[in-house]
Length: 46
Image: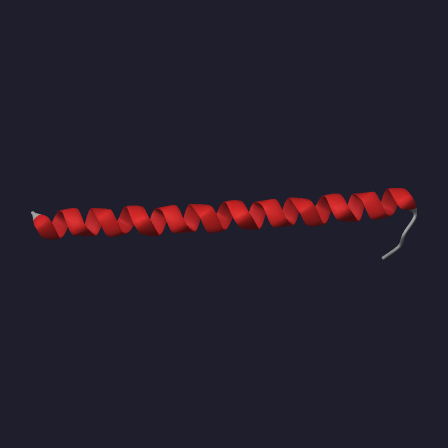
C-alpha cells in the first residue's frame, strides 16, 4: 500500500512540474507574440 501511495505522490509531483513548465512556456510564447505585434504596430520589420 505504501508503494502505491508513493507512486501517486510521485505522479502528482511530475504532473505539477509539467503543468508549471507548460504555463511558463505559454506565458513566454504569449509575451513574444505581443512583442511582435507591438513591433509591427510601430512599423519595425524585425
